[in-house]
Length: 247
Image (cartoon, rainbow, N blue to C red; front, side):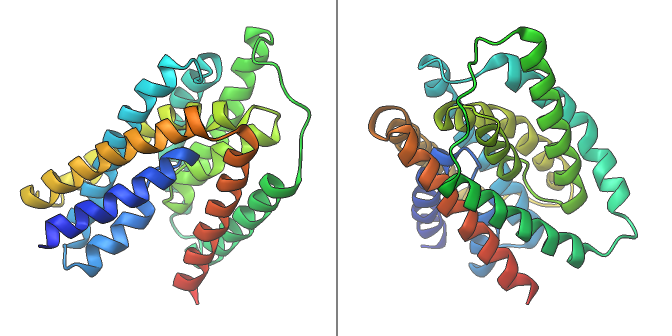
């Protein structure tokens, strides 16, 4: 019954968070641990599910033309390069203080998503300008993600929206980037963990199904303003969850 219940929970959270492009691993890891799954197995499974879900979602986003390649590709490269550097810098620093700072950033980003309306940026801007945006956002997300041990999607989406990108394109482009970040995290944890095959089978089904539903809602049913509102609420929920864990 545990794998089946985990699959249902995975479906729900994946559908919701795919809309925002941030991946559900940060929610699924504590859920799996509460169900008695060993910590490294929980982390490895959740990160692999992130990659599965956002790969499925990215297929739909690419078909709809929502991924801004000139921004997404440099984000993948630069974020992957700077994430290990952020992890090294974090050694010896007070992680609790860093996490409180990140909670503050999430609250600020959420308020920006809810109340700030930036001037819309044309994705037909020069290739050099979009390359610079992708490199800067990817570098910041990769470094901070490595510094805090958190997903970069929570940083990339509000940053792109704040720079004027359409919320749907920001979410879709972030989904593509997070696929690679999640796979890197999975490879790091799988060496420390065994694989719970029934858990992986049921949650993979839930993850793929949730991604199909979430990506369909984002592309075909929700307006950009609704996506922006949902992202803001999700960021607040992430901040509250992190703050509760720090208190």
